[in-house]
Image 1 (cartoon, protein in one colour):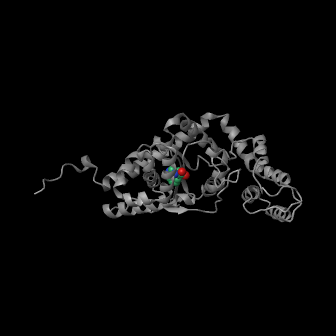
Image 2 (cartoon, protein in one colour):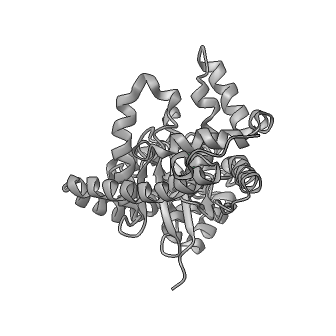
Image 3 (tube, helix red, strand yellow):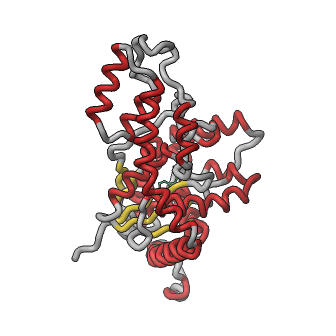
Length: 343
Ligand code: TRP
């Protein structure tokens, strides 16, 4: 059998995962895991904006692993890798930095807007933040990934990765890295419960994958809808209405969703009824995850085993790549021996 192509994708360990992560990434990862050899990376080097809360980051590493197990990413199939446990990432970042020019890094639109946000909210921005796209390039090239499933905000980083891989191969004359492709897939960018453009923990507008049924009920009941839909008889707006956006994302009964939209726009359908159906849809999605989570929560040793096995696989892939990289850069001094004196 031909070797399967490889995927690398990652997440920063900054808290437990929510429905936005699921709709935007995890759902797709689960679908891809049978067709590729997958490296799922917990990027605990990419936390320079969390140095004042390192305990939170450490806890989040385990939370992310549990969330992954809960959504059904199979650790027998793919590899759960903790970035820092494969310290070769640091070496590769340094060596690849030679092939990443400053100009394109500075111009990277995702990095640029994140840096601007940080500059507004902090006194200083760490260099470690500025170079996170470089570390991400090392993440992707380490297992020589062919495909990187990500959200569209990450596209500029994948572009840089291709450029660096291409330049490395060209300048060393050794084809060490395949040029990775981004895969956007059919992902949904989920708005927050409050209608904010993004579901994010810092805004407190998330439904977490680990939320129990009562929490989901309470959160959905408090969701923003059409602010002008005051009485049930009034016609309501469906576009831009978070409750209907969530129905589109999570309710598999598309006919019923279409009917509800029509009824809501016509008038006569109350928000409570629409929300109750959304609660059912979300619980149907989360119930199997809750079951798997309970299984692993009761058996923390299995979580640890998944992480340890994944890091071992990550290390094996890294050793092979670093060997090739060192040889391509002629850093294998003692295999080569002392060169003849230059004349
Ligand atoms: N920066 C990515 C994010 O915030 C997470 C990440 C780290 C990543 N390393 C990666 C994504 C490598 C893809 C590939 O979402």
